Length: 246
Image 1 (cartoon, helix red, strand yellow):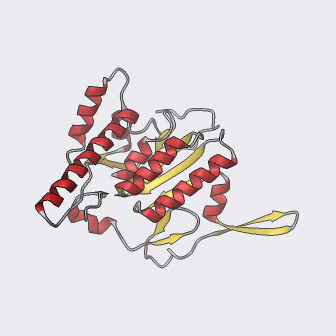
Image 2: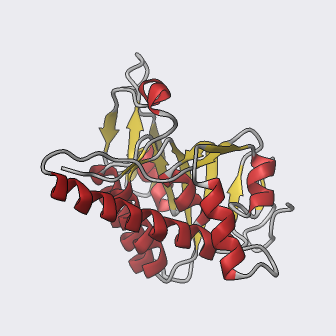
Image 3: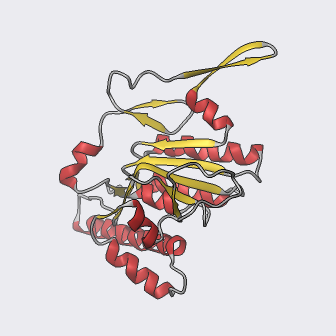
């Protein structure tokens, strides 16, 4: 059965990007199989009732920080969506900070996160640390306008969806039609969030159709010029209200 997937790079290189991973509650975080991967730091706080401990990711969630690391799968998507909904319900006017380091993954899982980002009323600030490839780059671009950032040595990659189908010829034709529909949908999403000033919709669609034809890698500076992000952060901005320099 066809399953639309945003691969992290070419098929030959995919085996280097998708390593066995382990997931930790409550964040959409995947970790590699290194000896230190099982060690999640614990934060201990002193309260009037004594000591209180949190795993580091739960403590970051209190600061309205969501970490989306590793391949984007249905389980990661569900956790990210749940955190977005929780933080909006807690305080809808405050921004949510989504940190992305992902090689991409399932289109449907990624679109569930994307739709929720547009659904909630809280502004979503996005940050690329490491890499935002494939569906990861779409989520990076989907942040609030002016609040999409990457760090200086981050890598961004966009491309068209990939997938496969087997069975009768008529079934293969149906799935081919579906993946073309998905490609058109994703092209439109990129164009909507990354349009340059003065660029017409038709010109923007054409620009992304060309770029998505093959794996298109960008440095932080190139992603800024392409419209994927609004700024490159070398240091944390002095205040939340101050926009970082480009």
